Length: 343
Image (tube, rainbow, N blue to C red; front, side, top):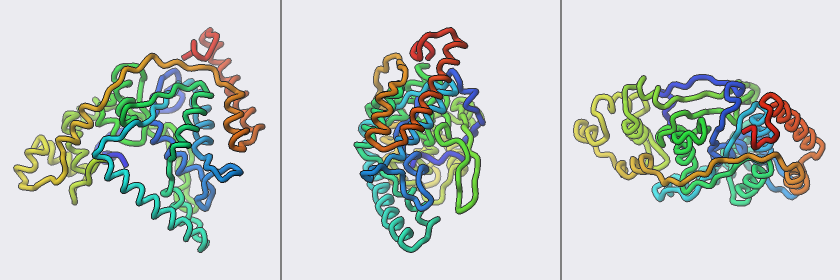
C-alpha cells in the first residue's frame, strides 16, 4: 500500500536519458507486483507458459531492464527480507483483497464483463516464492546485481542512496521518503503509454522526488513527515478517519507532533505510533559491498525464458543482440572494455 503523500509532496519530471550513467536501487517487490498487475491480456489473464505458470514478471523484468541498460542506467534490485511484525495485519488484509479479487475475476470473465475482469485480474496479483527465485535468477543472468535486504527493501535502498552507493531509489511507495531516501524515482519501470478504462490511455513518465527540498518547502522535519504518514495510514496502521494529507500537514505544523495532537485536540490515537516511528527511523541496516555488474549471459537468459517458460527464442535473441550493440556503443564512447568497467 505505502503512504499516500501525493497531495503534499512535489515531484519533478525526469527522462531516462537524464538518468543515463546513474546507479539506481530498485524496490524489487514493488516493481515485480507492478509487472504482475499490468502485463495481462484484456480480460485480466496474466502471461503464462504452456504449463500454466505465470510469466508476466519475467517479461517485465527482461524487457524493462533492457530498456534501462540501453539508456545507460545501471540498476540494482533490492529484495524484501522479513517484514516488521506490525505489518502482519496489512499482509493479511492484502491477502483477503487478492482472494476477493480473484473470485470477482472469475465471475466477470464468466459473465463476459471484460473491463471488470481486467481490473479484478490486476487486483488479484500474487507474488510467490518461485516467482521471487525466478526473478533473481533472470536478473543475475542479465548481469544485474541482486541484494537481499534484512527487512523492507525500500529501507535498504534508502540507506544505499544516503551512503552514495547508488544515486537514487526507485519505487512507487512513498515509504522510501520516510526511510530517509534523499532522491526517490517514481514510474521508472512503468513509464510509457498505459490504458485506463476500456479505451482511455495516459502517458506515464518518470518523476523524481527530492526529500530535503520537499521538507524545506513544507517547512517540516523528516520526523514530522513520518507523523503525517502515520496520521494518514501506513503499512503498520490504519489512517485516522477523516484526515487526509493536507489536514495532517496542517495539524503537524500547528501542534508539532502526534503527542501534542492527542493532547491539544483531545483525541486518542489507537495505534502504537512510537513503535511505527521507530520502524522508519531505525530500520535494520547491513553492510553493502560495492555492486558489480556483469555482461549478460545469453545462454542463461535463453534457457530461463525460452527453454523453461516458452518465450519466443527469436524475439529474445534479437533483444539480446540489440542490447549488445547498445553496450558496445557505450563502451566505445567511454573507451571501456567490459560492462563491469562501464558501470
